[in-house]
Amino acid sequence: MLDNCALITLVHAVSWSGSLTLPVCSHALPGVSAAHLYFILWNCQLMLSYRHAFHAGNHADVLKHYVQIQLLQYLNQKDTAYSYIDTHSGAGVYALDGGYASKNAEYETGIAPLWDRTDLPASLAEYLKLIKEMNPSGKMRYYPGSPYCADQVSREQDRLRLFELHPADAKILADNFRKVEAHAQAQGERPSVRGKRVIITKADGFQSLKALLPPPSRRALVLIDPPYEDKMDYRKVKDTLADALVRFPSGIYAVWYPVLQRMESRQFADKLKQLPATEWLHVTLTVNTPSPDGFGLHSSGMFILNPPYTLEPMLREVMPYLVKVLGRDDGAKFVLETGKGGVRNTGTRRV
Image (cartoon, rainbow, N blue to C red):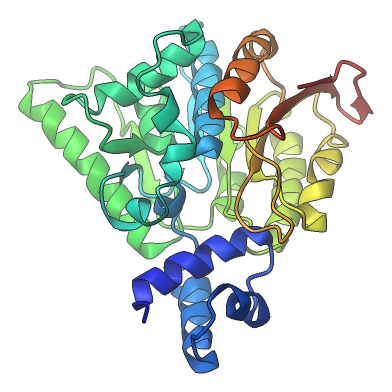
C-alpha cells in the first residue's frame, strides 16, 4: 500500500495533464479507495497547492532559468539599478537528493544530462556555472529557484521583490535568504547602498504586482510563473500583463507556462501575442512525444514581452543544443517565434 507522500506525488504528477479529477486519479492509482483519493486530492489542491520541489531541475526549469539569467545579464549592461519582481517565487533552493525532488527525479530530464557536458554553448555554460557554484562538492545536490538565480546575477544596487502565497514555501524562502544575509555578514560584507535589497512577501503575486509598477528606476524584469493547476491562472496571467503594460509599458515581462493538451494551454501563447507590447518572443522546448493519455510534462514555453535584442540569437544557438542533449525521442523539438504586439512574425523556426 502506498503511503500518503507517495500518493500525493503521483496525484501531483497526474495534475500536469490538466485533469486532476477523481476518475483520472482512480485510473492512475488502482486499488486506492475513493475516500482516500478524495483526501489526497484535497491535500494536493488546498494544502500542497503546487510544490515546485516535485519538478526542480527538470527540462522546464532549464529553459526558464536560462532565459531568466540572460534577461538579467542584459539589464546588468547599464549602471542604472533595476527591480526584479517574482510573482510566484517558490522556496528559492531545492535539494535534489531527498524529499519531494527525489520522488519523481524530474531533474534527470533537465539539469542532470547537462552536468558533465564539456561542449556547452557559452551562454548555457554561464547558467550551469551558477548551479555548480552552489554545489561546491561537485555533486549535483541542490538546484536554485528563480529567486536564487536573480540574487546571484543581479547587482548590489538592484532590488528584488519576491512573492509567494504558499505558507510553507514562503517561510522556507525567507529562511533561505536570512541564511544568505547571515553568511555575508559573517564574511564581513556590508551593503554599500541604503534600503533592503531583497523583500519577501507572503502574498498573491498577481495582485501585488500592481503596486510596484512603474518601479522608481523605470527598469524592471517581471517573472510570472504560476503553477497553472487552476485553469484560471491562464486568464490571470493575461489580465495581469494587460494591466502591467498600462502601468509600465517598457518593462520586460517573462512568462513561463507548461505546454499541455488542455485548451487553455494550447491557446495561451496566441492570446499573449495580442497584448500591446512593443515586441514579443516565444520559445518552447519539447523533450519527448506526448503520451496518448496526456500524462506528464513533455514541453514548456517562455513568452517574453519587450525582449532584449540579444535574446533571440542566443536562443537560436542554444535551443538546438538542448533538443539534442535533453531530447528523449524523435518528438523532441523547439519552436522560436518573434513578433510585434498584436502581429505575428513570419520568422518561425521549428526543429
